[in-house]
Amino acid sequence: MPASYIPPWEDLLRVLPEIVLTVGGTIAMVLEPLLRPEKKRRLGWLALAALLVALWATAVAHVFAGPAFRAMIIVDGFATFFRALVIVVGALAVLCSLNYLERERADSGEYYALVLFSVVGQCLMAASNELIMIFIGLEISSISTYVLAGYLRDDVRNNESAIKYFLLGSFATAFLLYGIAWIYGLTGSTDLSEIRRVLANPELAPAGALVGVSAALMFVGFAFKVSAAPFQIWTPDVYQGAPAPVTAFMSAGPKAAAFAIFLRVYMTAFEPVASRWEPVVWLSALATMLVGNFAALVQNNLKRLLAYSSIAHAGYVMVAVTAHSEIGTAAAMFYLVAYAFMNVGAFAVVTHFARERERYVNVDDLAGLAQRQPVTAALFALFLLSLIGIPLTGGFFGKFYIFKAALEANLYWLTGIGLLNSALAAYYYLRIIVVMYFHEPGEAAATLAPPAPALKVALWSSAVATLVLGVFPSLVLDFAGKSATLAR
Amino acid sequence: MPQGYVLLFLFMAIALAFVLALLLLAKILRPSSPFETKLEAYECGIKAVSDARGRYAVRYYIIAILFVIFDVETIFLFPWAVRYKVLGWFGVAEVAVFLGILIVGYIWAYKKGALEWV
Image 1 (cartoon, helix red, strand yellow):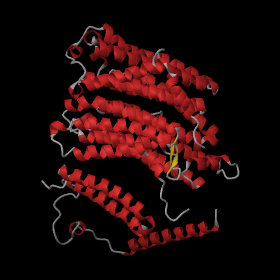
Image 2: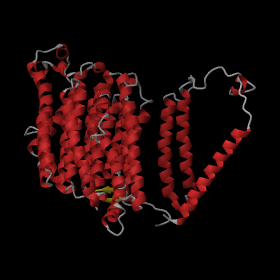
Image 3: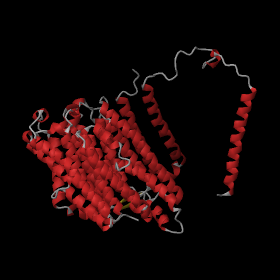
Image 4: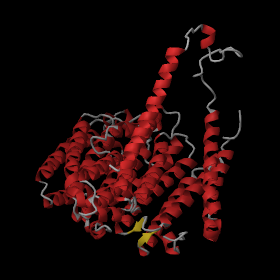
């Protein structure tokens, strides 16, 4: 090892998205106290511009694909895929937030800075090939999200949400870190490829039970972040209490990034001991689907309902993880894209409908929305149908590929229960559609103003993306399939 | 288990036993006559007026956070200073980025009024 290490210039290009986002976030933060209050809205556009430039930077980084900074970072198809996904989710969240923050009279500078910093962490997670980088990325993303969850300081629900998220989240991260310490002690490395090499070599491999302890500890951390059972308890409370656009953001972006590291760690480093962790993930996938769907059946609060639905969807992705094959990985990647668009879209409708202080967040409040605002209702119905998994929407192909991958991995029971769960889920999604279309308009729907332009953009782009994924799934799936082969 | 650890554990056990034995011995030998004044936090000097777990201004907390940030900054500067010659201009650039981010944080805190004592 040389006395001092100076990385080559290409390495900086490989982390260009992170650099762009950090600079953008820092500028937004420093401009915040300097601008007059009426001009602060422009910081949202600055954040949006930074995210678009970062999307371009992701493409640039992909041209220079390869390992960077002593292989701590690896830019491959998988990294590019998830980087692009989390950046797009960030942009949609910013579009949803513009009017929300004005409505709640919240200072906006730090909000956008925090969104950008959170996306930095998620991009880093997508591209890290080393456990310490994974941990740092996860922490950057999580800490920003903790603050975002409690952004409206005067709101009791926001405070509750942030405190619960922060306390439980830090606790779960500690487990992850302990798992990292174990595997470092066992293999002498934090590099995923190196760990894999040691574990795959029968002469070097440490005792299976010890590797199992490490994998289990790390599973606690990952399962918490993707809200998989039995570590999903925080999700409904946190999603319900946080501001609606923040919920939209954290139910899609951090979750996708957490699945990215989950897949990378378990498909590369722990791949040689797959027979050991497969039953655990199997059970967790099963429990996550059941808990999410059954609890969602009895919810009346829209945000809480969508929180449980997001748990259930994490369960479907866990089915793909259980399959631990390349097509399983590709199916999980496709599903996360489809899920991000339909879920952010649904939360965008909730953001629009909730009004000041989030007064109207119950399913019953939606009564007669279709008569007052047919377009909004139709878009919401589209997102809900996609969440059910009706053909011609992204959700259908997402589920289709996941169950196909599960069948090819001989997971018949899990596939069967997963399919039954999808049928069960139809009930609570359809209930919302019934209330919107067949009930007489109530006070909440009657007083609803038309959506603001920025929110309209978010709604329509999510809707178009959901439809495109449902009609031409190969656009995304081909890239996912090519990227699912992870570096070893 | 390597032989060295046995000795280490023996050492720990003896140390623990020694401390416990001395404490026990002191407890047996010393006279015990507690009375109110003796049990106060300051036997002579200012009279204690209330519980130590009282309320205090939340501002101390902001100052403490700011202190930690700049404290950590200094800690990060030391390794760079030690390897200054080897790292050359690359090291200078890296530290400039690091300090730049911290200065932005400082400007932000200053403009937000975190340093003002109301």
